[in-house]
Length: 153
View (spheres, rainbow, N blue to C red):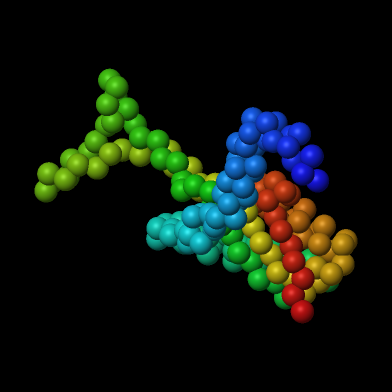
């Protein structure tokens, strides 16, 4: 055993950094991410949009045979996009009688949906789960990869 250690001692001195880097990588992977425990705060407009979408999806799910009682949760990736009227490179504003300036809104886009989670009593059946996913995807124009359907007992 001592012969082996002596033989490779010079080789080990050359590559001492490799185990240190592996250990540092393991420590970094074990560190909790700051994003895991962050709660997203939505403004009043976004909360209203979420409530309307959840209610619309839940109402639609009542019509799917076998879906049973469903709970819906919608999360947003971004707020809506607002485009303002521009004239000569600057935003056009309207001034009221009190002197307050308000930009003229040309177009307002809907917020982007990050994902939809549905807890359904009938999600134990693969065919019902697939019908729920397809129906929600069609209704909301959200990709099926962003829709999660779980079973509720």
